[in-house]
Each structure stands twice: as structure tokens, then as C-alpha cells.
Length: 395
Image 1: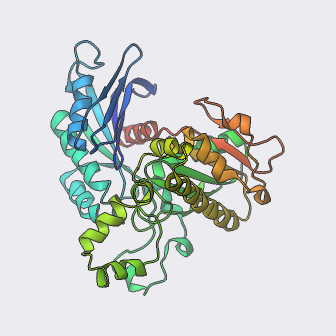
Image 2: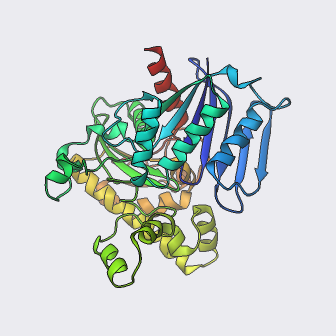
């Protein structure tokens, strides 16, 4: 059975086509920098690789480009849309409605749309991907896997905000957390690698969006993102946590509208606001050339992550490993080095030579005497989504 997985990020679209249940990858690829002038598209099979640079204005255009290459007579891997039985979608915010993998209906789409205000960079893109996929693959079962699902185990002491109780009971305002599919996948890989029945780990998902999860014995107990994906770490275009009073100041004193504030914090802040660039590869390049804004932004990013490592080590009452994953976590030697610097009090000691390795497999990059293991675990959200989608359809 052929299962196509679509993973829409805030500015990217990753895809993989699997032959299930063997988990064989028939093709994979990514569309990066969606909405920018220098968008990048990559399509890869066992025998061919296509790379294109052009302006890709939105996720709809990106998905149509993916379909075009899937069906291409020369390099495509399927003859027609009828060959694909399931299309699995990553959906960021499930709110109170979805804690499990769900087959997509009109009602499900309406609820995803309703939740768009809580994940403005993601849910609209996720929903657009679903609508376009229904058109391109009309006979396939469309399945949604929600980022928030793995984080349902977070206890009330961690997910409840210190505001009047009725905002939780009547309006469901609480910490939900995101990137759950990635945190679930890499935590399971890390726990197997450690070979421990009981474990205390922190998973650090660093991409254009960034989040961290404290995981005890395979269950999430806290998470850096909150009611929306805006809270927590400094991200590509998102501010991360700020003093809420800043919002009132922007509105009352600087006369920003609420719509402008929303756009400012979600689309114009973070690394973009600090440096003028949202892609960490650009920021690292200019930092190496002495750009002071880029150097400071990298240090600020690492400092915020270090604070979460410390707080989660306290919440877990110990720490067996920290786990780096996602585009930045897996590929940026410099960020890993900045984050792990001066954490020896927690038993975190980075091996520079191991950290500089370009291996793409799960690996340990801590010194032999490091009390806390430092792991790099390549995430595969697409495979996790495919497995969950198959399990749902099978049942």
C-alpha cells in the first residue's frame, strides 16, 4: 500500500511516499523558503534527484509541484493518483478536539480551521494542504495526525495557566504543546539507544519552529510551547516568550492594532527580527563574517535553550540525556556547541570531534565521562505519521 505523507511547516513542505507496511521510501523531498523569492524544491528517488530554485508563493503551489513530479513519466514513482491509498497530514493544533489520529471529514476540516487563530503559521497551511490533496488524490483516505497528541500526558500542574479557572474550564485555555510527532519519534529512538527501562530525557526540536519537551519514562511531562506555537524558544520568525505587557504597550502607546501585533510576533520577530534573516544557515554565515547582530542572535537563542534545559532537569529530578533533532538540531554544529557550553554542572560535556561529525544516523556526541548523554537523533515525522495513519485505517 502506498502512503503519501505531507508535513507542512510554517515555511516548508516536507513529503515522503512510503510503501507500507514495509516502510520502504519510494521518494522524498522538501520545498523550503515558501513565500520567499529564493524558494528551493528537492525531489529524490533511488535513481534520480531534482533540485529547483524559484519563487514558490504558497503551500498550494508547493503541493502541486510535488504532485507534478510524483506523476512525471520519466522520474515519477506512481502512474496516477489512484495508486496512492492514504494521504497522511501533519496538523499542528488539535485543541481539545483531537488527541488521536483522525480520518479527515468536513467536520474535521472545520475544526482545524477554527483552531487556525491559535496556530496562524501552521493550521492554515495544513488545511490548504488537505484541500489540495483531496483534489489531487480524490480516492485516497485523508488522515490527520496532530502535533498536540503526544503532549496530552502533560499533567495539570504544568499545562494550567495562573489565570481564573473558568478560562480553562469554559474556554479551554491551557498549554497544548506542539511538534509532538517529532518529539515522540526521537524520544522512542533515544530511549532504545540508551537501553534504559526508566529514563529522564529532554528532546530539543530546532528548526524554523523550535520546541523542547521534558520526557519521563517515555511520557511528556512539560513542553516549551503553550496555548499556541508562539510561546517558548526564539524561532525563525516567532518571538517566543515575552512579557505580555509588551502587547499592551504596543497597542496603547505605539497604536499597533491587534492584527499588526499578531503579525509582528508571529511573522516579523525571532531571528528575522533580530538579524533580518530567518534561515539559520544565513545567520551562521554572516555571524562567521563578524556580523554583530547575527552573533548576538545565536547567543540569545542558545541562552534561552539553556534555561529550559536547567528548568526541565529540575522538573525531571535528574537527566539521562538531551536529544537534538530537526533541521538545526541535526545539522548545526555551532548551535549545539553554543547550547552545551558551560553546562558541566548538569553533567553535560560535549565532545568537539564527535560534534563535528556529519553522520546522518543516531549518534552520541558527548565525552566518554559525560554524566548526561548528548544525542543527535534524526527525526522522521513522516514515517511516524505513516505508521499512525496505517494503524487507524487498519482498525
